[in-house]
Amino acid sequence: MEKSGVHEEKSPSQLIDEKIGKLNDWRGEMLFRLRALIRQADPEVIEEVKWRKPSNPLGVAVWEHAGIICTGETYKDKVKLTFAKGAALEDPSSLFNSSLDGNVRRAIDFHEGDKVDKDALMTLIHAAVALNMSTRATTRPVLKPAK
Image (cartoon, rainbow, N blue to C red):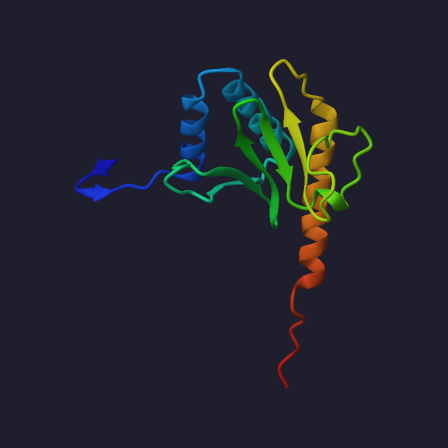
């Protein structure tokens, strides 16, 4: 995009909009709905796009608050939300159905026709933010007062 002869880089939110717009099937609608729930659960969430490469020029949608909450990826047969610290989160509604063997991440695979448990997903997002905030608070360096 050119503006006054200067190349204007798209914002992460614009790149995610573009990614959703290019998915002309159920996956675009699902990613749109999941994104809306993430933003509703945490109005302070920051959208990023990471891991852009020639085979995936729009990259991976990432939602952060004091660290990565989750990523959103689309595949041929699913939309995957991967929680960066999912193994450390309580999942009383058993939403996690993928990447269950790892020590850190957990994911939710959504397939065509799947219903989204809005309340359970929002609870997971709140828990992920709380974990990020607590981890961040305990890993900050302690500043000693000047003498």
